[in-house]
Image (tube, rainbow, N blue to C red; front, top):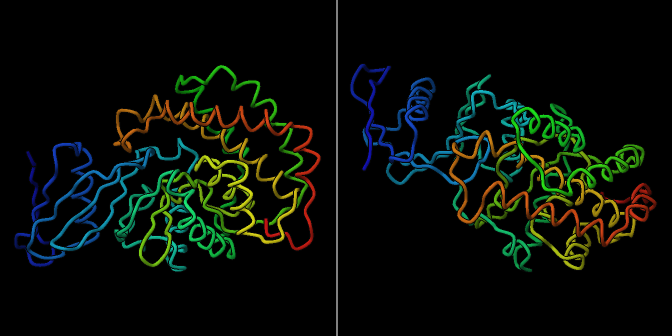
Length: 342
C-alpha cells in the first residue's frame, strides 16, 4: 500500500510530480520531505517521485528518492539533533568537503539551521564487519582514510572524551542504562585522557564515527557517509574506530595499521588500542542514550539493535583492557615518533 501527495509547480503554477510514499514513512516525515522539495525548487519533471526508508542513520530518518532511473538520498533530522552531540552545519560542510575529495556523496541541497539535506545516492555495498576484514576491502579503506586525513577541517574540533561525556549526560537525562561493568571501565578510560592530550600525536580531518555501515564500497573506491561527528581530531581515532567496530583481532589490527604507516611502532599500536577501548565505551554510552529516544523512530539494519550494539562494545572494551593492561598502554601511548603518521 502506498500514499500519494502532490503540489503545484511554483514556477508555472501547473501540476508537478506526485510524491509517493511507502507505508513505513511516517506522516510527519512525508510533510517535511514535500516541504523541503518545494523550498529547494526540486522539480525533476512530470514523473512521480517515490520515497522509501533507507535503513540506518540512527540519529535521523534517511529516505531514498526515486525519479525514473535517478536516485537521491534525503536526510531528515530530529527536531533537536544536537541531543546526540552533533553540529548539523559542520556535518553538512564536512560531507561536502569529503565529496570534493571523491570520498563521500555530493551534497545537492541543504536546510539550515534544521540540518536537513539531500545528496547524491551512491551505488555500492554497505559494509559490515566481516566484509571490512577481507583482504580485498582493507587496502581500499586505508587508502580512503589516508586521503581524508591528509586534509584539515577547521569548522569543528572533535574530542572523543568530551563526546563520551556528552553521551553519558544524555543517558542520565533520558533514563538510559549501562552494562554492569561500564562504571569501572569508564574509571580506567579517564586515566588515559591526559596522556593523549600531552602526546601531541598527528591530527587532521577525521570522520570520527567509522562504524562499518558508514562505509560504502563503490566501483571507484570506498566512500563514507554520516559525517555527524567529523572534525579536526587525532587521526588515531578513526583507525581505532574502524578496527574495533569491524571486530578485528590484534593481528588484523596490526596489519591494518601497517598498511597505513609502514613504519608502525609499538607506541602507535598502544595508542590505537587505548583509543579502541575508549571508543568502545563511547559506543556503549551512545547506545544507552539513543535507545530510549530513538528506538521507535528509526529503521535499523537487519540484525542490529541499540542493545546488541552496546553488548558487542562492552565485550570489546572488557577484552581490550584485559589483554592490554592499563599501565602498559599508558606508558607507551604517550610517545610519538618523529614522522609517525598517527
